[in-house]
Structures are given as structure tokens and as C-alpha cells.
Length: 209
Image (cartoon, rainbow, N blue to C red):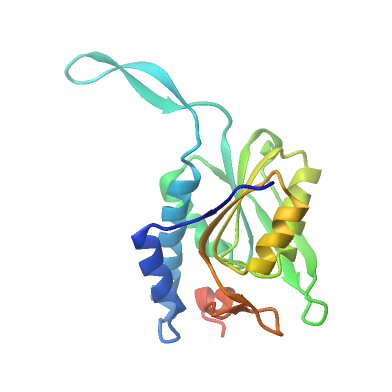
């Protein structure tokens, strides 16, 4: 089954507490989401393999470590996932960025696709799908299936806040995908919003609430 990792780093928990606040403004919310994404990315890339390379420092020749293996890609689920991209690119600036557009039907709560643009070589890359919220799990599962249909084989999912219901859906749909979670919340309410959550992440990132 999928490997589910819930972050316990004090900085991540502190920053998530800050964006939960109703009175946190758009600028601070957006900046803090980016910072949280960077911190989760730091943990989520712990598995990356290294190889030795010979270099010359200003003092002498030596052997250092460098990243080995497949290249990386970041794929945000539009639109809220965009808020996590800059933080991740701070750590992995050579990663390519794709975009998957899904919205949740207000009646059925099912994901509806409206956009998909991926790097041409995405099948050769290790892909991190990002979305601040994992609620029902429908959008995340659909986005990952779209990537698999394009030939991607090594996929991870990163979110800031998750509901237990969404985690179970994603684990069952894609048992081969590792899931990185900033905080696991209590439940979904009758409108499929995460409780206690932080409201609509997209609205709060872009100031459209």
C-alpha cells in the first residue's frame, strides 16, 4: 500500500497553524503556503539517490555528492496547487512544471477535467503532484491517473492538509503512490470541506473569496 507520511516538523506545524487562522490575509497566506511546500518538499525528497563526482575546490581536488537518476517534475492541480510550486522550485530549480486543471462538481463532488499540459518527457521524470488540500481524494486520484495514462511511473503526492476520507480514497486508488501530508485533520463536513481545515485554499491564495 501507499506510504503515508504525516509531517511532524515543528516549523511545518507552526506555519500550518498560522494559515488556518481566519484573519490571515492573502499575502501572508500565499507566502506561508509556499514556505510549507518547501519544507514538505525537503522531507519528500529524502529518498533521492546520490552519486559521487570529482571536483576541484579553491583548495584541492575532492569527491562530492550529487543527485543521481531521473529528473524531477512538479505538477500542481489547478488552481490552488499553484501556490505550492514556487516553494518547491526554490529547492529543485531544475524541475519542470506541468499543470492539471480539475474542478469539483458542486453537486456530485466529483472531479471534472478542464486542462492538462505536461512536460514532453514527463514519463521519464519523477513527478510530484501538489495540491494544498486532500479532501475527498477525487481530484488527486484523477490527476494521478492522468499522469499514469501519459506513461509516468514514479509519482508522489504532496498536500498541506488532508482528511482521513481522502487519504483512504487515494491509497486505495493508487497504492503505489507515496503521500506526504502536512497535517491530518478530523473529517469532511456535509459540503466535503475539511474540518477544521482552513476554508477554500484557492480563494485564500488568490484573494478571490
